Length: 417
Image (cartoon, rainbow, N blue to C red; front, side, top):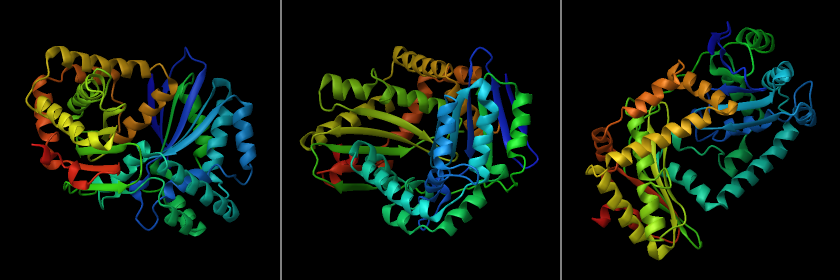
């Protein structure tokens, strides 16, 4: 059973009661991420995520870690483009302490300047680690190319120079503007009762002052762009992307099916054609990244530099296959069943259920029933997939980025006929 309550200070509480488990997954979600930043303070949302674990007025960094370990819990956090999440999974009988801990780090962070200076070095190491992993870093690099000056193009971690230049005053100012009232969603799934959970949340978070919820709206101007980060590597890491439906678009289900057919599974066309049949790459995949107002469909491949032209020709051939309606009913059914199966398997995990509660609240302001999602996937037709492929898989609209030894012009699919 799913329940929703909004506190007087604007915090939204969403819970799902799952009585047959003995755990509870709790997430405090902030409607804030890197797209709420500017080039001048880029990386500040992620920095705050780190600093909230660096001690409160009542608990040290060690105390926080000790409490989590002493109750057999798992605690972590992550910053995204649109949301930041702090989550804690615990045995159900430690719910009160878990909420008290989450509320403490949210309402009483120390923001110690000495700790901040140490954390700058830690985050710069995190950036270095990402930059040293080209198969991961290509996604950040591509975002700066694809989104250009749009806020979605800002890297979540920020830059080393920007991180080192942040001040404690900037950190506090951003935090106290964003981590308040209407900008917070508290989601929980597991062995709980909504009424009892609500009472605990009101006690823990009720004194947090309200704030106006920000509804950002950014115009997106998509222009094909091609860029290469030259680096001496054994492989060239390539990412090709095109504008895609948003998280709330009526075409989102067709986009999910199209992605599954293209490169979202081992039986997908790109995986079979590029890896299995031709042996041109070890890793090739497509993925769909939806946001509140827009989205992106991307294709990633890592291959040897001399094989780049052949790989791109194969990718283009598969784009044409999909835009010309070559998908059979058998393939379509497979893609649908895979999507539905993955969704249902994920529902057996309280973490996934909690994530779903929060994201539904963020994007739809309602809980989308599982049956509605499953029936919407089933309802996607071959014609809808073909029409969406015609819109999305058009080389005239695509951008590309690469890390390795290759020329920017070689990434332009329009050059391959």
